[in-house]
Length: 134
Image (cartoon, rainbow, N blue to C red; front, side, top):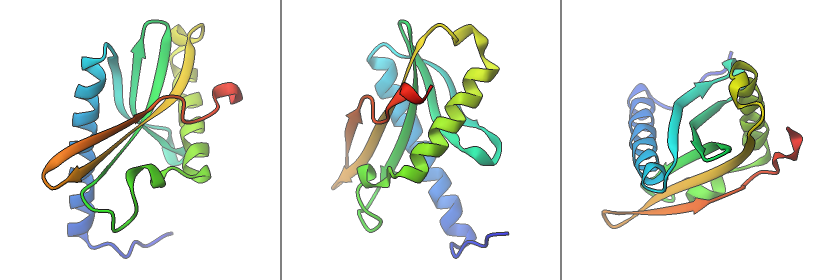
């Protein structure tokens, strides 16, 4: 069993920040023609996909990171090999549950949201992971 050094207040705050980021990211994607299929898809302890969406014949698995400060690094710096493996595992689980998407292309995108003063800045990156592992 792992114990977190975060207080309950910090964990709630992190969850609220995550929800804010996913709301902003969902709107950003919808304005660009994406259809949101699901948010916060959990594959048990194997990982999570923040947003699963579709555009034309492509299913897109999106990692979202909102940072209100750079104390823990920039949003882009949050993507590492451990996180990538968990995203791939969760995406495979999602596709195994949704056979209707089996003939579609898949990719992994990233949306990083940071605040410059009180203005959110969105960093959108397509194809952050090699989807050939599918």
